[in-house]
Length: 246
Ligand code: BV8
Ligand code: ZN
Image (cartoon, rainbow, N blue to C red):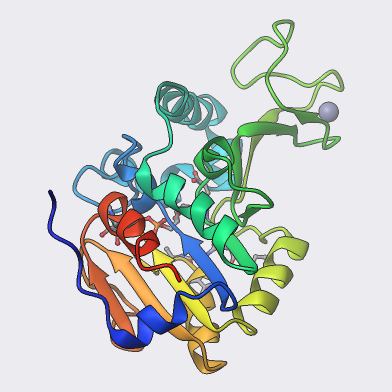
């Protein structure tokens, strides 16, 4: 029986269903599903630097390399499934009367776990779109050939994710700002909190008077300003928090 995490009395009292809760997740919540994180020792970026691949310029300069990198990541994601941390967040959503889940991840694992109305700040790797006409391609039709695939209009098809230097989807970001500034309890789970503007959400919550809790394997950029750090694997901590629900 894995030993129970120690949770402050302040946090325990906030785990009642009337509390307004917002959760922000990053690559760390998918690590135990087998998705490499970005900046860890097994990080995706180890092989490639973010500037090299997750940018529009990189795609225009070397569409084959960027497209192959996303195909490599899609293959990993096709084989894996949500882990206990993703499943615990479905229970969070069922427990709290007001609950919002915001993710930086593009792996779609929250939706796969059964979470509803997930706010995907950085898009979704399973979606593609045409650079020229914006046509959406959920799964690439077999007729679409070539690397990168060509749209019916002749334009290049790209992954429907937010690259560095690109704006986040405005409505998703505005909604994330709104709920983060109006919640009682904010969880930052499995994110190094270095990528903006997502990394500003826990700080906005803190400034607006929320109790901010971080779940991570180690301290991060925001550890010094938030209220409580639960150090350990999200797959262990998140299900244990469910046990404290009142
Ligand atoms: C924009 C999609 C401007 C693509 C991604 C302000 C300040 C500083 C910099 C900037 C700023 N504003 C803009 C910038 C530049 C840039 C930025 O933030 N750079 C950083 C690197 C310094 N931001 C942007 O470019 C953003 N765009 O602001 O546009 C603009 C303004 C006006 C007009 C036009 C443009 C766009 C950012 C989005 C980039 N796209 N992803 C793809 O995936 O290929 S970001 C990428 O990083 C992923 O989405 C990822 O989710 C995200 C954040 O990383 P994390 O999720 O935190 O993952 P990481 O590996 O870093 O950390 C994992 C954590 O988990 C670790 O802490 C680890 O300890 C922990 N962990 C591991 N295992 C576990 C665990 N925890 C618990 N349990 C475990 N088992
Ligand atoms: Zn097109």
